[in-house]
Amino acid sequence: ADSRKAFLQQQIDSCKHHVPSANEYDLEARLRAITDRLIHSQASVEALSSEKATLCLRMEAAERSLVEETNKATDQRNSAGAAAHQRRKSAASAEEPGESAHITQWWFMVGSTFGLQPTRVRQVAAWVELVDGMTLGAGSLIGQYPASRIATLMYVVLLHLWVAIVYL
Image (cartoon, rainbow, N blue to C red):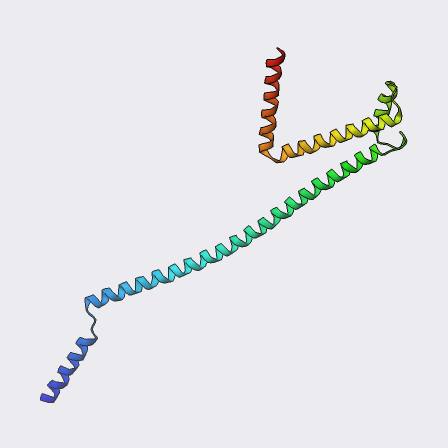
């Protein structure tokens, strides 16, 4: 009976060690909750990392596209300017009125009306083409830079004020 009593007492003691207390249940519940939050946070971090990588790739593609479009626009502007310069150069250097552009032909008609020599008409046409090219260059400069637009506007206003004050 004593051995049986000692055996039962030993089993009761071992059961006491394995039966979790309320505090252990709370700790296990908190551990599970923290583990679930950790897993959820890691999933969120992975999702945000992949979204960031996607957005970075899209931004790089947009930057490349913008650079290509800017280069293309610059090339078109340069080729248009070169073509206009070539037309002005060929019109100014034409030897015969029939060989020149219609603008130079117009100058020959005006020049003959005022009795100018053909060489003088070519010189005048060359000067007009030069002034025209400078005006076009200034116009493109004003179109590209806002500060030049403001400076030009201020110049025109001041010029008008000066003329109004001096001559009125």
